[in-house]
Image (cartoon, rainbow, N blue to C red; front, side, top):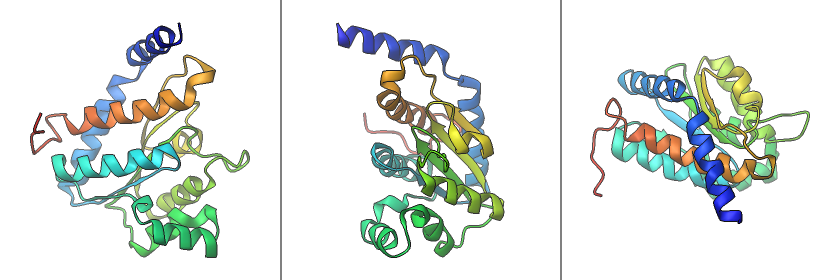
Length: 193
């Protein structure tokens, strides 16, 4: 039965995910907030939807100034049309005048890989972030891609079934960020329910 197998995979991922790294990420986000840094959350596809939701939670529950470039569809599509898909995030970040007080948070299934043409826009954004001295965080799938290679604290969702990498990676992005925003060192406002 598919549902039983899928949920047993969820249990396996939950048991294997790096809990210590999630706690380290919470501390990094607390440090970001204490130094009045901004959090820029980037991702494409289903991960872009997660970015929008996560920005809401980081702002509302944790008091972290956070933004998702994908929330501005007009600018995103104008940049893709006029400048190319690979620069949609980097140019948005450049206009935002990112500094080394800020951080990038990547939600991605593959983490970016220019050679495989997987999220080259994330790779370009992370290169700019490294040049500017920003911290790089993430929740990614597979081997973590470029985000894991250059990141400061990047959680890799364990692969337990190659056929379900995307749904599990995107689902655990939500599990991890909800764990973060409910962590007592970050949460400043209680949820209603």
